[in-house]
Amino acid sequence: MKRLVKKTKENTKMKLISNSKKGMEMVQVAILVAIAIGFGLVFKDKIGEFITKTFESLSNSGFIS
Image 1: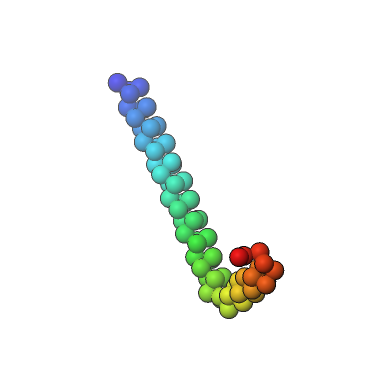
Image 2: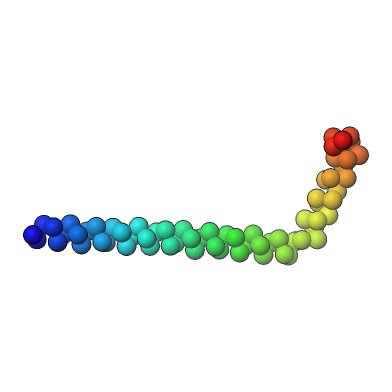
């Protein structure tokens, strides 16, 4: 009986650690997404110019029909 209780406690601890790691991964992903959005907002004019210039170059070169 003690062995079963001990295994149950160990399993519970492992599940908590596993859930904690998953939660930390989600926080990291959320932070990275927020940083990407922040950069996009700060540099949106430069990004727009780059995309426009790139597609104009592709159009002028005959790459896109």
